[in-house]
Image 1: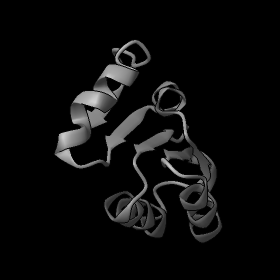
Image 2: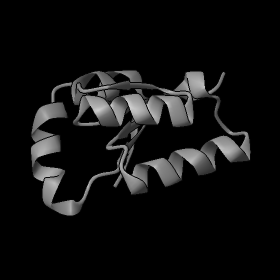
Image 3: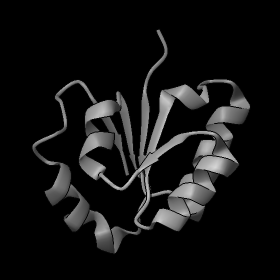
Length: 95
């Protein structure tokens, strides 16, 4: 069974990681859900990467077996506050 990957943030850092994971063959587009703040960013990244995107960080946290916080460190506190009730003990969280 493949792991579900979640990316909170789909800017340059998040996109680079997603490209790398997909190029390695370790994950398919259907195994990845990412969040992005703006509708234009979600549309652009969905077309470019072929993955699903959302504005909701909580749904990314609930979806993922491995959760990447692909945001700048100054946003960690805000993101963690949003997702703290939606992460599981068996998740791997990468910052």
